[in-house]
Length: 303
Ligand SMILES: NC(=O)c1ccc[n+]([C@@H]2O[C@H](COP(=O)([O-])OP(=O)(O)OC[C@H]3O[C@@H](n4cnc5c(N)ncnc54)[C@H](OP(=O)(O)O)[C@@H]3O)[C@@H](O)[C@H]2O)c1
Image 1 (cartoon, helix red, strand yellow):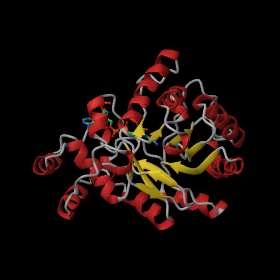
Image 2 (cartoon, helix red, strand yellow):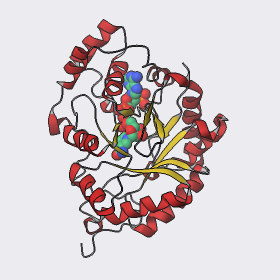
Image 3 (cartoon, protein in one colour):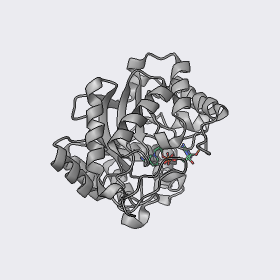
């Protein structure tokens, strides 16, 4: 497996992103940034890079940015060959906190620049519903060169329309929940109409869709594993994917996606597993309002 086999997607600002990355949510599971946990995260990130991943997805709320940075440093791979994403924590939406927490992210990662910084959740029921000021502050970070691209995560079509309409600046990426059973068609269509790349989180449905009979049948017929079939389905739809695993063999399995194709009929059969909203595993972005304990909560004034 060489990195050359991982295709890149060109974003609307001309930057490129490897279509496959390594997700680090729950590595390790308790999100507590102790030195021991950072060492564990670093071990998995360094191993992922050793296997050939070149794109790492983390977030302020994962509590593991320090470990990700340590893993990147331990890998010895040139910075220019890597793509690192982090995301703004839900407690940090006010413009001053965007800037302050971005500085903290950079200190923890110990990197000179970040490739991509995303608003993690729109939180339309908090901060007086003002995710536009948050987006504006994100875009202002681009000016000093420490972040190459900015985007969003979990933005619904109306959220995208609003930030683009009010700032004139289009996110390069929207990282959203997509997996067999939840195609998230409306959000994907909105991304396509604005030229925004779709990055699929929980691309394996957190492992819950691996036992599906249709996927099992395709896997048996093609000689691939269910995880490979699902990830290949994403790749053929043009999604960026960031599967997470804490098993060495699965980390390698999830990289081996670029020597086979699913037929159009197989892609259509997996598309047909969509169950609309009932297939959603994670929170609904229209109502999600969780702020991690320990973060200074800055809810709607008066609420
Ligand atoms: N923006 C957001 O709001 C958001 C939300 C959720 C996730 N994310 C990002 O998306 C990444 C991926 O999502 P996720 O971690 O929720 O779920 P996921 O990648 O869909 O699934 C991970 C689960 O599948 C298992 N797994 C992985 N590869 C496997 C394989 N080849 N065979 C069998 N089981 C396998 C893992 O188990 P083991 O670890 O035990 O191998 C784990 O339980 C996260 O790590 C994070 O970076 C973003």
